[in-house]
Amino acid sequence: MSSLSQADFRCQHGDTICGKSRSAVSVVTKQTDVTAAIRVYEQEVIVVPILLLAAFLVTIVFILLLHFCPEKVDRIRPQALNPATRRGLQGIDAPPGINVLEHESIALEVPMSYATFHPPDNYISRNLAAAPAAPPSPPPNFTPIVQPRELPRQRLPESFNLVNPLPTAFSLPSDSPVSLYRARMDNRNVVLRVLNDSADATQRHSFLNFASFLAQLGPHPFLPELLGVVSLRAPLVTVIEELENRDLLSFLWRCREERVNPPCEMTERRMFIMAKQVASALEFLHSKGLLHGHVCARSVLVSREFTAKLWGLHGVYTRKSQGAARRDDASVKKWQAPEILAKRPAGPSSDIWSFGILLFEMATMGEAPFAEIPTTELLQFHQRGKTLRRPANCSNTLYSVIKTCCQFKDQDRPSMVELGRRLLSGEKGASDKVIKVSEKINIEHYLQEAGYGEANSYTVF
Image (cartoon, rainbow, N blue to C red; front, side, top):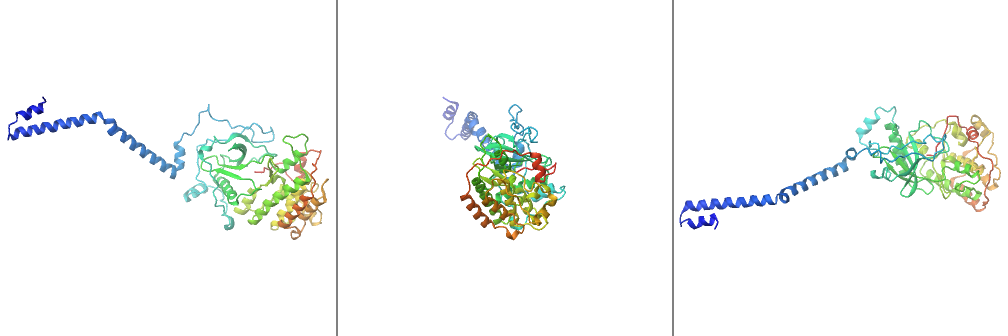
């Protein structure tokens, strides 16, 4: 029998002191039992709830940081990869001596980040205060306000495969803040416009505003497609579809060669089809109040299926959105209309003139226009009523379109609608015979005939 039972047995009826002692013993015994139970179930009763509460609080704090302060989350994450596992993004296919980007790596793990498309006011004042001159505000009729599709941060560098410097016909200018690469993303070929680490705040904003400009411009079947941007971390990247046959000028030069791979063939019918595609893109720009300003073969890109898409849109953005003054560039004078050479305002008909020069380039398989005329004498040449010579093997229909586009007076040139009708009519009667030109282009002679100086170069992107 327990001590409690013995105490109950010995207490007499009416004994108050004995009853109180019995109650005290009962309370002590119950407290001892509860303490023993807590000790047995201590992990389930105390430790687990505290751990769950702590995990919940940490999760809430991380979610708030991720939503309101993504830059701080980037700093929390590991910033450096193990050198043994770091991917070497080296160029392997750039021809030596031609591409200045050969063997240059993309720094895809730089731990910087930018709040770029919608920066706070203090960010703009802090970062642009030291800039020499901020670009003027865009005009109200075409303000870049659309943010392109932001590629998730985890895409870099895992989703950009086979990254190599982009081979170009001529090297990039040495002072360009942009490097060009080709890569694979989502099982398609893309071109990466990567802003160099040395770019200042003004160049960063210009780089991203151009991407915003392309997004607002909207998709068009004959403009290269903007696939997305990387704007929340460095390096800043604009991703554009790659057109495998590169620029039209290089394509025409390759068509002059024998046994090229992939096959490169140009017919008169294909010329009219490509010309219609470029004209469609040009009409689209004009419908938005935009002038291209530099329609030429090197501003047209060609896909694997020989679809022509008009590019060279950075100049469109610079002139329209930033109000930049026209530069006196000798390398574009052979494609400029007489009114531009005479320092008069350009209009849609000025692009029509340049389009006629583009047709001449196609008909000659990439020769320079007005090759025998120095750029300083071009305006006088046009004023005397002279025009482009007729290329060999050029049909009457194609040459008539060229001459119609290159009329000295802008009011005598056809409208885009009339030009479209002429091209459609020319396609119906065009020949499917492959055009062959045996002589290869001498690049040094071409640069001289096209008006390039020794230091001039170009890139289509």
